[in-house]
Length: 310
Ligand SMILES: Cc1cc2nc3c(=O)[nH]c(=O)nc-3n(C[C@H](O)[C@H](O)[C@H](O)COP(=O)(O)OP(=O)(O)OC[C@H]3O[C@@H](n4cnc5c(N)ncnc54)[C@H](O)[C@@H]3O)c2cc1C
Image (cartoon, rainbow, N blue to C red; front, side, top):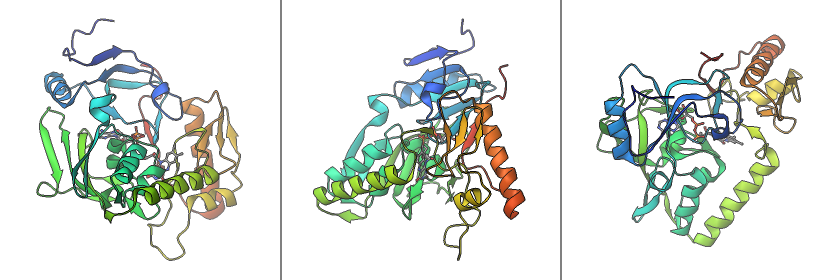
């Protein structure tokens, strides 16, 4: 395929790249073009020179996504490689990390420097870019609680900083108000205090064990499918998994998609699921929960791309 309308970057530009291998569910169609920028300068120059009518989509490690079977139009950007995954100590309690760094790697790096308060990140199997967009969190802490500021690139290729001393970002449950086409490139995070690195490592290990016992983390999945209907902190908060269980959906199947028998707010690809199977199963669960308890569940997993090939 020739790419007459795309600027030439220093990084890789791959037409028709399969995206399923880049997502936890391992489903979905290809990108029109996949772009793997070398660094922030490469990304900014490419985006600035790109026809403004071409849509762009950023992928993290695809742990909160269903890429639909028709693939993603325009340019899909993934921040892969050493430049994007770097984590550096930049203050007594501060770390600066690339948006492609894995949350687990950031938690471990903080621990090695004796910084405590970032351990929760080890429970989230995504990248920092994805964690920022989704305000990821667990065990009572969210990304917003440790973020000092973030840097990124706008759709016109401009570098912009949000956070301390700059434009504030509004975060809410699994949401940030960053512009949809803003690409996070780097973050500064602050730990809560100092502690013994060995005890932080033990804490991270314990969180990982707890996860493995309660969630299907070795499956092709994408975490919680539906948001809990009540905001955190609501007395007698209803949880999505209990409503799904009560509606008899544990283990329910559509094609190769199944409601996890271990944690019924997780959908899994048992091997040969399509994105359409996963979405149809999710909608079936929503319909059964509505019928059983009157609650209309809201998708937490992001579904992106075309339903059918163009
Ligand atoms: C087993 C399992 C357990 C999970 N447990 C939790 C949990 O406890 N808490 C929790 O919050 N989540 C959880 N998740 C969901 C998921 O891990 C998080 O939402 C994670 O933050 C997504 O990061 P990602 O890099 O995979 O992003 P992706 O899934 O690739 O993308 C998610 C969103 O972020 C955007 N995005 C990604 N990178 C960037 C960037 N650089 N700039 C701008 N936007 C970007 C994407 O466009 C997309 O809209 C779980 C998932 C799994 C599979």
